Length: 293
Image 1 (cartoon, rainbow, N blue to C red):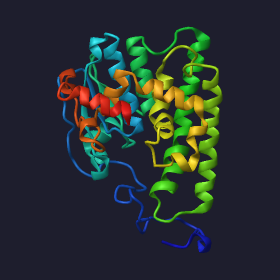
Image 2: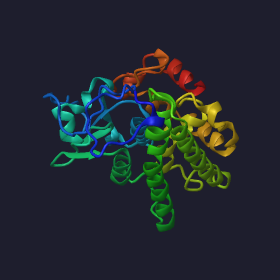
Image 3: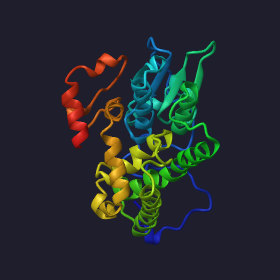
């Protein structure tokens, strides 16, 4: 790696070497499929292709919450997409999400299949489809959508910004870590001030906004993201911690966090989910593990 203090950007940037980072083997400056492979299809109308990263957890939590409300049509197949192996660049996956990022949803409940990509778009699609977790009153709906899109805009500073330079970059760059640490702490303060006066992000109602924000910022304050809790002093954000722990106790959230998970305690993993009965094996042990982690 070039010493950042001696680096001068070239007149024209060219991709002529790997950067040595954790994800260097799958990063590239072009889009499109790298290989031909169809996606599998299950028996349910909703086909999810994902991995239990924070963005993936948003959608599985939403689906499990819908099922818990009694929306039987929210039954789904969750197929594992191992992004470290480049599965997101298959021809089948690119057809569902041309951006080659998880999660991606194929909704086959209507006369024509609908592809939905970007986690926020999937949450909004499901909320409107089932009439749940999205307020109908104009002011509350606007508040909910504002926090949903706040997460979509803020999350990259936490993930691709702070997370990358703090946890994954092959060279620790003080300026980059300081810049993104400052922004993440500002975001935590935004949430902390909001949650000091509200049980959830949209007042008393648990909504898609909470489902979008919790897998990122809830995991951060619970010490489950980048091992950065002490570095960022996340315990100072007491209202975010309260909110994060409250949501973590929801059984649907515990199930959703388990789906497409391939790391951590074995009891916390359900690599693929094709039926509610897939949780039956050691379910209580799994939920107990997740609730305490």
